[in-house]
Length: 117
Length: 117
Image (cartoon, rainbow over all chains, first blue to last red; front, side, top):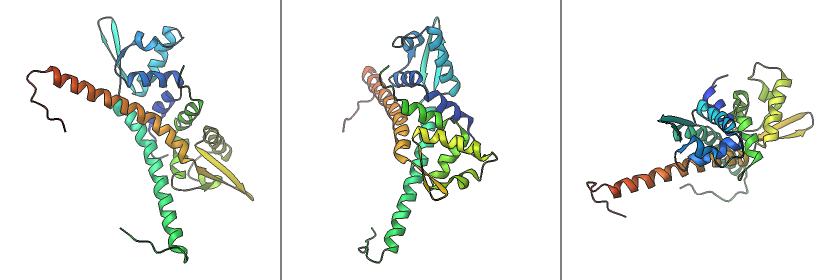
């Protein structure tokens, strides 16, 4: 396969879980400590840490330890790469629809004359 | 959890596999029969059909049978919902950076005076 991007596998896998999406959503409003990040979830701290590890290995979240506090930050660049992949597919799809529309308009003898800008 | 969207779980899960992304990429250029879709892959037809089933249940791909041919079509609306989710997180992140920039500029007495439009 061409275009095989393991980073995309891991990013989309990370986003396929509602807890991890909620973490990304929280971090999109600014960095947070692990315990702040864990606070809204009805789950054990180890379970939160495990979700965080998936986000980290996908590249979507970076963490940095300062003293006893580990701070988590969103990597907007990684998020942007996942967005860009989907965006490009949607653009390809729309371009194809436009071409199809042009073709149908040109092949219809009853179509009103089109003015090109 | 608020914002729990099972459809997003399934869409991101579907996109987390390189074969399924390649199928989405192919379908973004137009509908294809199952055998056309399978052609570039060095895998059995049942394996392709299984990947296709994941794409279908995620809502990213629709199929329609006409005679003996099953045609697969991308659902650009579903793709757009996945894109939108990521886009919104990135926008939230950038908005926060802008606010932070404003705050830093206002609290720096040596900063050049800013002209507001």
